Image 1 (cartoon, rainbow, N blue to C red):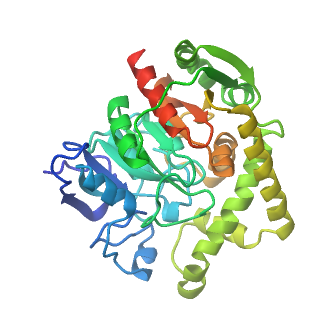
Image 2: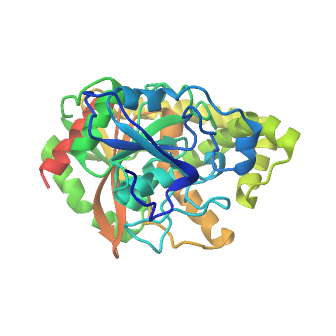
Image 3: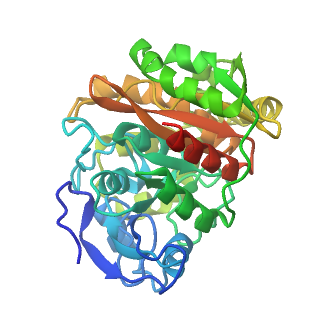
Length: 392
């Protein structure tokens, strides 16, 4: 039996009950899938009603959906996303904005808004999202959840609607570390690994966040320090967080325009102004800017390779502030989006795994602490998440 959608997390008409395989390692758990993942027999809507009519109904489940079903979890529906995943706050002009139960007057974060809202409200145990420029990490922070952006390329994205393939990843949410670890073991194909032995604290990222956020996260940093042992401060982005963000805001829109150009040019679809503006930005990007951004991506990757040898992780605020209020105007929201990208750009640029840990609040609204490891160290980050909850 499915519970009522009290937080507007699910796509209208996309509540289902597809039972998982009996006796699997995730038996007894329920999950939802962001409406970028194929579910056989249901349209992949991508948060835009015109996109759904442009594409055939899938005949097979996407890889991540099928993997969770094979592991025993029950699928309970498809969740609302920002239009074609081009958003970071969770507001959708077609299907509405899911309610953030951690702060009902504030946005849930996007573009995996419905997935985060459904997990936070207890409508399912875990949920699939996607992360290109922060679309799992941001809602995890805003909704008080565990969320992961795996190493780029680690998880099969077959049957997942792309946006910017060089940055796109599948991700997932959970309310507690035990469930998070169970789901992660299935999707990563690896049990939680050994704990790291060195912790870097990204002073530039903490300095960039609102002072109240940096202060609220200190108890989590202290707990993390006790778990890991050796601690030192470091600058994550010596070129500047805003420079890394500019590179991601250059590369991602160019790829998004390539992905959606045929749909836009052939059908002239309805879309929110902010979505159209983002696609237009990508269409008009100068070639020289793209070449510069590709070089900056190489620099960012080299920097994290240097900072994160085996056994080392880095921590930073997931977002520079808690969730903004719902319904703010675009001129107010745009600078906020730019600041969020400054703390999220490393994901798309470097492909390094990142986990957002819950546990802090600012004026009653949640904020997350992120941990980043070297490429392929996803299992160690899951182990840290478990250790942090056990040490609370």
